[in-house]
Length: 137
Image (cartoon, rainbow, N blue to C red):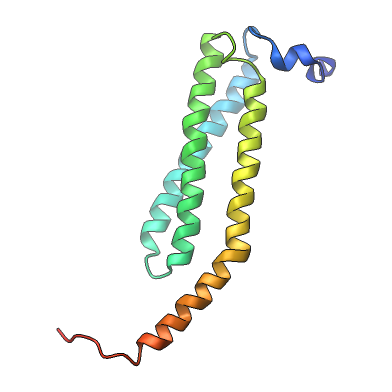
């Protein structure tokens, strides 16, 4: 691979970039399959952890991220394989990567700042509700 092309405008924004290299397609296939497997794992782990709603919400956000990445990755692979003009441009990989960075940033923000507050509020509600009468079965 010529690294000089990697930094050229034409390499990223060519209308018909040509046939994608075999290694690029293999890496994309591995990424898409990995995202699919991660989405499945996060889905089933979120279903198993019903006692902690905050953790379930984080797991569902991760499931949504990897499901979206799988969906978009399949389309990018399809467009690369079929050499569709404009849609097979390499800059879509950059857009895909930037979406991942932004989405992961929101998930980290939720996990570090919002989730502890929500977890504390749920603990307070739990302490409060233990003194309220409940309906006996």
